Image (cartoon, rainbow, N blue to C red; front, side, top):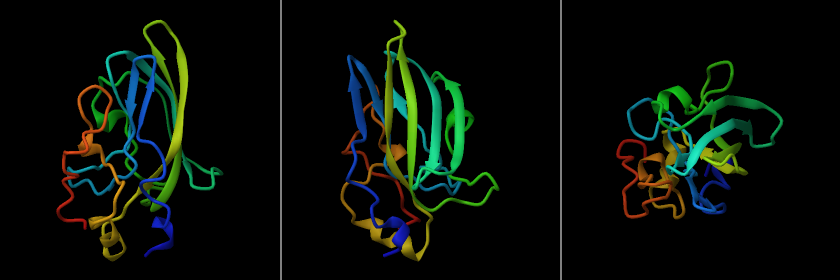
Length: 158
């Protein structure tokens, strides 16, 4: 198994619920622009009014890979999701950290943070075919939750 994937999937929560504010954050995605699980971003319910300071950092937390100052979840995912690239345009592989602030309609704020994994399709990715605890963007349910019964739709990667 690739060292970058050693701690991917299953260790961290993917659903957050704060006083009715629900946020699903996939813990794996495949940034290949094949139309399946290409962007990493939170999925929110209607109680979340906005996401601020959505930041992606390297696994060590020492390099800012992506930042979106603000979005309300109504925009197209291509406008606010991370496409899995380093600032130089090359694809990122393995574990990374994220952090964001979510606000509700009453301006109550909560910090949501965790770790996730960018999976590059190829021989190393085969371990994800049967790995438990991996949840992808395609498994976002209605209203800021994960639909564990929904397949990950990764037919060509694993």
